Length: 209
Image (cartoon, rainbow, N blue to C red):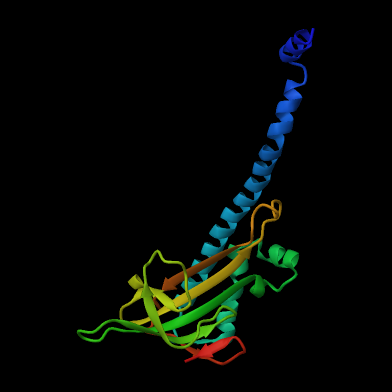
C-alpha cells in the first residue's frame, strides 16, 4: 500500500518548474546585479585612464617653461570632460569631486650620470594626491602605481611630467556582494617644447622640492 503513493509521487511532475525556479533564481539574480556593477567598474577604469592621460598631455604642451598653481588646478579640473560621471558620483558619496577622484600633477627631474645609474627626484607636485620630496625608484612598467616609484621606461635625462589619479569605485547595485575597489593610474609625458616646467605660486596642496 505504501509503495503506490511513493510511485505516484515519483511520477508526478507538477511543481518541478517552480522548484527549479526557486533553486536557480537567487544565483541568477545575484549574477545580473553583479554584472551591472562590473560594467560600471569597467567604464570607471576607462574614464580614469582617459582623465589621467589627458591632463598630463595638456600640461606637456607648455611653451613658457613656467606654470602657475592655478594653471595646474585648471588642468586637474578638466577631469570632468573625460569622466562625466565624476560629479554624480561625488554627489552620491557626499564629498567634493577632488576628494572623490584625487589627482596630482608632478614634475620629476631626471639625471643620467656618465657611467652611472639614472636617478629621478621630485621637483614639485600639485594636488590632493601629491607626491613627497625625495628620490623616486624604478619599477616595472607593469607594476601597480606608487607615489614613490617611476616606471623604468621613464628614466633618462631632463624632466618628465607625471599625473597620479586615485578613484574609489563603490558598487551601486551589488554593494553587499562587491567591496569598494580603488582604481589608481599614472600617466607620463615629457615637456614638448621646454626642457622642464617650473612651478610658480603656492597653495595648501603644493609640494615644492
